[in-house]
Every structure is written in structure tokens, then in C-alpha cells.
Image (cartoon, helix red, strand yellow):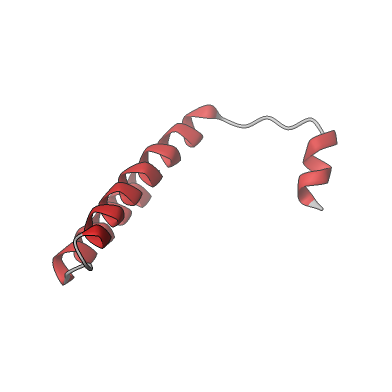
Length: 60
């Protein structure tokens, strides 16, 4: 329903936010893919991803 409403309603979004989110998603997905191709994620990998997420939330 929301998609249908936004299709016909005027809607403005800041592109800067999308660029920041896209960069974060790409980095996290690359790290996750790297760990999963190695057979799993060790504890340090999970901690690293949490730290990246906390930094992302602090910047956003």
C-alpha cells in the first residue's frame, strides 16, 4: 500500500542518505561474503561487523 501511495504522491528524498546506506550495505555484504566463503564467521568477525555497525549508526 505504501509503495502505491508513494508512486502517485510527490516524494522527495535526500540522496546523501542513500549513498551512505549503500556504502554501508556494500561493505557489510562483502565482509559477510568473505567470511562465509571461508567456512563461517569467527567471533572476531562478528565483533568487527558490530563495531562497523556502531560506527555507521554514530555517523548517521
